[in-house]
Structure formats: structure tokens, C-alpha cells
Length: 338
Ligand code: TRP
Image 1 (cartoon, rainbow, N blue to C red):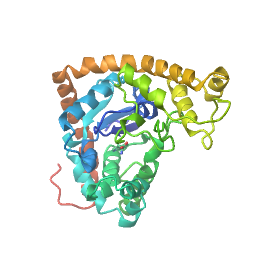
Image 2: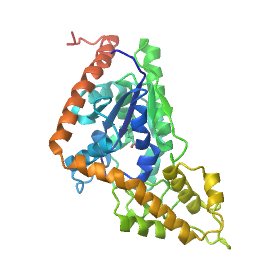
Image 3: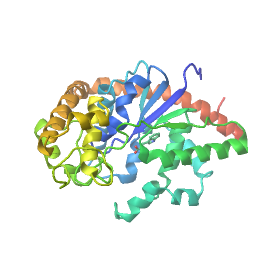
């Protein structure tokens, strides 16, 4: 592997439609990142199996996500875009890392615990439990240095680092230790009706979420219904404890307009909540329109998407094999690699 630039790995699950939270927290930064790093952008379909829902048209969702990647400015000439299940090395490394991960550390993952608490899915499958180990495989397979993630994935990445350090301790330098890069602004866009929890594409109440491809009417309606507060006289300022709803709306507006929250507080001083919401809806619509247009362009060109995925997988496999070979030889496997 010629390491001209540091490796950056990022992935999203193709389950459900992507939200403005996904975009603002993660995808928005991707097109710029590819100028500074050797980027790998993965569609984590194997991860999506952990919460698989028969209603979801799997293949369609993967194509949707791929089209969105391109619409977000990812350039297949600069970056490697691929689908996780197309690169079998992820599962091979996953098994090996399973054997270097501890039951206790996985049990401590808050995302797993909250999913059980909420009885989020009736029967808990083992894949949901070992989910972070597959993330470790994704990341470590490419000798990744940087992983752009949202706040919610921080603990998972900490675990990935622990697993990598453990393997390095036992076998010498096998893996690069990855570092998280968490974008400050917009890394935590919250639900519209329950602003103390994260905006999530898998939320059962769709009024909590604004999707990237949301229709104009629906953007206005959802923002109009977003929770605020009953402070009298109403005042727009950021305070997570007292004004979770307004703070979230400010966070959204700040992320899409690139204006500091303190600046917005001054600019919006004295206006009514309804007016504030109208401004946000209008800005959101303008912000999302070009993404949507570009998405439709790519989404209607399936053969191009298939070509991008095919070529991406070829490139990813070449890199993945190098790491797999390395760990096979460290483990002293009777390996068929030449
Ligand atoms: N778990 C991530 C999410 O749901 C998706 C993901 C899978 C990922 N593998 C990854 C993110 C590797 C970063 C690195 O958002």
C-alpha cells in the first residue's frame, strides 16, 4: 500500500433514509476530506442486517445510499467507495477480531444497552452485540488513521482502538491505531419532538426526523411542529437544559448557514418562534434542494452506480488483502497467500 496520504475510513448503514443529522454530522465533510486523505467510504450493509427489517428493500436502499454519497460530492476517482458485503475480507478479519474481543467490554457498549432497554427490537440477535467488532474490522482492515464519526460512535471507536492495541501488543505492529475526528458543529442534531434524544433515521415516529430527500411541504410541517418551550415572553437562545428544542433548532440553523450560534441569537433576537421556524424551514429547503437534484441524477443511472460499486470493491479488496495477509502470518496460519 503506498501511503501518500493518511487513510480515512467512514461508513453509514443503508437502512432507512439518511437524515439531516447524518449529513450535517458526517457526510457534509466528506467531499473536502478526500482532498487531504486517502478516503474509503463504505456502505455498511452487513451492519444493517443487525436491525434488518423485511419492509426495507435492501438492494434499493444500498443504491439510494450510493447515489447520496455521490450527490454529497464523493468522487470515485479520488476515493474508494464500496459496499461492505462486496469485500469478503471484512468478515474474515471480523472472525479473527472476535477472538481478541471480550464479552465484558462489549456488554458495556451504551448503544447496545439502550437498544435492549427500549426493547427496540423484540429479539436481540448476536450481531447487534458484536456489532462494534465488525466496525473494528472495517476500520483496521485498511490501516486507517482517521475515522470521522458522530458523538454516538465515540465509544465504539474507543473499543476499536483497544482491540487494535491488544493485537499489536500480542503480535507486534499489526494495525494502525485509528483516531476519531468528531465534527463539533452539527455532530449532534436531536429529534424534533423529543430534543433530548438524537435524530435517528430508524426513529419510528417520522415527525422526529427530517430526511435528506424530504419534500418541501413536509419540511415546513415538521419544523412547524417541532417542540419549543413556553417561556414568556418567548426568547431565542441556546440552553440545553432549559430550552432543548430551541437549542436544537439553533444547532440546525447554525450548521446549514455556517453562522455561529451566538451570532444567530443576536440576529434572531425578538422574533417569534413561528417566524424562527419559518426561517429554518426555508433555509433547510434551500440547503437540501441541490443535494436532492444531484441524488436523483445518480439514482436514475443504475448501471453507473453498479460500475462505481464494482470498481470500488476491486480497489478495496486489494488493500484489505494486505492487512489480512499480515495478520494471517502473525498468527502463523497455514496461509494460502503468496
Ligand atoms: N456504526 C456506524 C453508524 O451506524 C456505521 C459504521 C459501520 C461505521 N462501520 C463503521 C462508522 C466504521 C465508522 C467506521 O453510524
